[in-house]
Length: 597
Image (tube, rainbow, N blue to C red):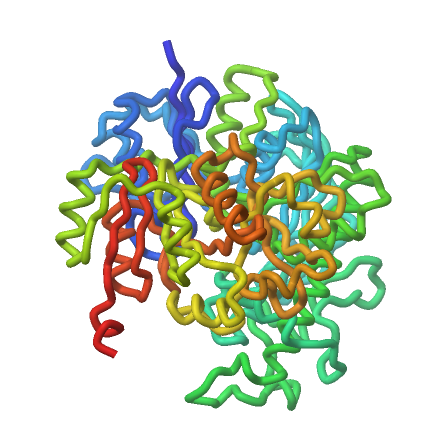
């Protein structure tokens, strides 16, 4: 009889992962279904479980604090109550609450998906589990910031190090030997507690200073190369007096745990410029650009130090990296250069956001119950969303709903590539959607990378900021000729912003960022046959084995999940073509305003 386990992530980037006998059946983020960016409370995602099974053995809940909300009358917690109402569970003991181990859920996700039989996990996150502690005879709430775990099969996770932050001021504690019984372990780990912001919260503070929501840190990463090193504010991370470890400078970054942190701009005259500006784009100001530059450069050094610390503490050179900072593809590439002579094998988890904790919770439950020691390279594929292959009838119905200009059958990869070669943007929708923030050819927008002003044009069409970079998908066999892979054989998940080889930038200007890098996805034929074929045909026509690839969404929206999302996105933008290789169909949605110009 099959074993069914569902893991759910409750907070921002909420979602569900469903396992059958230890294999991932599907994993989806709530935002893809609700269409609300970074959405939490994965209620819609839970209903998707019914498409695959009507019974669960266990429902495993991952979050940073316990689920204390209760349903009327029954008194069930929200998620246990929904599972009962959907008849997925019958008994309360089928619900497992793992809120105490948020960082361990990140570690579980990255370790089990890495393909390593043992590894040391480095977790760099905003604010993990809320932990009550006794300090000076008072109870103080602290939050996980950075953690290191020793990981081995089947379910051996030993805490080696934690940095925890507190709403201060409190005395600083560092290099403590702290009991790890809370982590369900015997023994102790090294502990640092202070009232400063952690690595990620400092990055979020700069993100907010640049005019965005703290969670939109990817925008700061895109802005950073427009800035430079200056001396009109102190280092963001510094060494406290009398200490041998670095933390954020509280004079510059003020934590507001658990929600975020703020740049103390009022303390520094040049940082104060633009704070009262009502109109215009503050990212054009040098102080915003320089802060983005500083937080990128300094934070990646902090994480590199943690990676080296993890190897030293564990003696293991297999390193897995997760938590929100793991999505920093600029830093990920930089580590490869810095670590090239140290024999360290680095796996960066593509689902490093909190959505990954649903995967981690489900996998840890499976391995803990079964004591299975099978190493499965879960990380090979990210096409894990619920299957959304539409029928021809569904496409025609939705196309009519959004006033499509035409629905054309018997259309193949060469037809879609011809449209791209004529200067059109073509969206691609096929099979199961990608889990995580990167579009990898199943929910992608494609364009010609040779177009000189291509970046500006596509950013305008997607309603994105001018400085946002784009990615390139390249045939695997050509990757080393075009990019400095820094020792990697492949980069299938678009987790590294790489420098191109000499003479390359002039050939593909639309996808080269101002610092000379490009977010690269290598594509093998077996990984995505249709997408590989499209890039191959583009190569045959142009001599360029690369296609411009960006996520199929508009600015501020999640990636499209359904055919309705896809055709609606065309209606709301200047994207005119949608290629559906599963049914050999191209949908055309002409922009009426554009036609009238």
